[in-house]
Length: 251
Image (cartoon, rainbow, N blue to C red):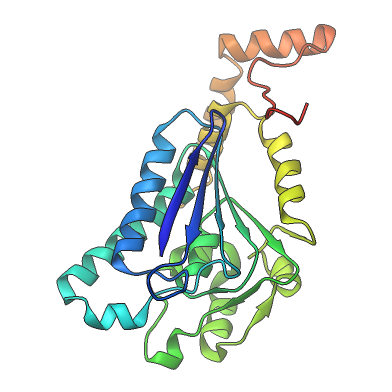
């Protein structure tokens, strides 16, 4: 797998590309490229990070052929890097969005699940085939459990079945199912760019596994001079808050 980056002022986009084997699969080079791109993207003052694929598949998961040729220590380091990447997508102070236009398997399902929002084409599918290869989808379990819970993880892993986007939506694995993922993404971004960046970062922090202190946070927010001034202007004359933003060409 290879990764192409587009670094816009408001939106950072990562595009997964086919690797030497002809698939969008997680080999050590692909994992390093993905992790580096995510790490770089979340350090910039962008408002959202979008991950999509340039091929017909979103991500086929681990490249097993490449894994067998990789020294164990190097493979372990790559898996740790991938796990850290998933944690960063879930905890980063920007909105993270996966656009799944085709099949997602194994680690590809985990990559999507780690994002805040998942937009899926109606033709997208999701599967955890690891047990068929004698493996366990252990690295992606935290991201999956946060989305769909242990019971459905067991079902997907034990059966290895293909789940459609329509089936995955009520489970919580997918947030939006659509015929036009690009149009759905634009609609989401229009809404997301109205959210105060500091509030997004705080929401993600307090809704994480160790999140707490919601009352204290809201009380502190209401004492914030910038927020108070923005709310006063909004209530007085409908003035848009200063953090409202629009993508060029979408006014």
